[in-house]
Amino acid sequence: MINNLHKSLILTASCVASFSAQAWQLEISEQQPPLKIWTQSVADSDFRAFKGEIMINATVAQVADVITHTEGYPEWYFNSKVAKKLKVINQSQGLTYSISSLPWPVSDRDAVTLSTKSVLANGDIHIQVEARPDLYPIQKDLIRVPKLEGSWKIERTDAQQTKVTLQIAAEPGGSIPSWLANSLVVDMPFYSLSNLKQRVEAAKHN
Image (cartoon, rainbow, N blue to C red; front, side, top):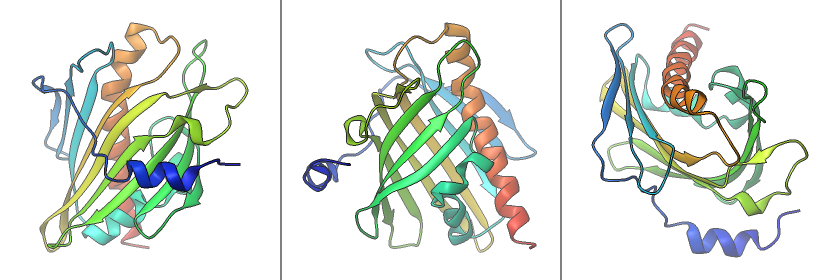
């Protein structure tokens, strides 16, 4: 199903998400929950990058368990309709497939992404995410995301509190109205991180 996957992943495993040098613009700053959202212009793109940051009352491991559980994304990640693992390359890398729902008449998008997980010496976890659009067959009635670079940073601030930073720059492919594009770069990190916090903290009490 996936041709030349191993060769492609070896060649690209060391890639790091790259964002433009433009200044970040603060869009949302809330105290409860402690959440901030920024957007940023990206060189040679009509779509802005976003960065979101939230504090979660949980350990790094507890947060990472939810973020790395691919099949659970539709339960908390904004507009996520389908998420599944295509291939586990090794303990730190995997290939995933996802579908994001968009309001009519805009077509839903699907994405194939390579995730690379790094555990730092202090226990913090960083996950790089990069589009690999050619590693899964094109699906009917969906538009494949041609470019995506992003990262999750899961960093301990004290024994029971973790800072989570989500940063993504993407080209969604096809045509998207400017009003929708502008709202997505704020809504996606805002609702995804808010839902993540609720899910992780609720799981601690179950």
